[in-house]
Image (tube, rainbow, N blue to C red; front, side, top):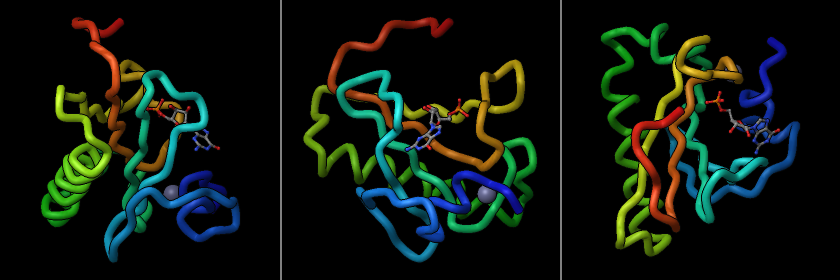
Length: 112
Ligand code: 5GP
Ligand code: ZN
């Protein structure tokens, strides 16, 4: 399968791990939208949140908890945002489920 984030997880495209465990892998976004912009992806290929099944519920929760742990470790004590863009209207551009962790500046709402 020709999936960018699968290649990053496998290491065939190099990246610096910011966090990793048996279920997920985290690395810096190549085009950061905030001083901290980390992507947390499952090691297993799931195309999007819309494709996740009931079986994936613990995994999705684990990814969100991993984002919170990265935020704690990274000193984002003033807050941060966790986002899962899903599908075309959601602005998803890479078809491998990922959690964005954004922080290090005040973030506006609503998003575009
Ligand atoms: P989406 O738009 O699907 O929610 O997020 C995809 C994210 O992946 C974007 O923020 C984009 O900057 C990031 N991205 C795309 N290609 C690469 C890459 O090759 N390496 C890294 N580290 N991030 C990437
Ligand atoms: Zn993949």
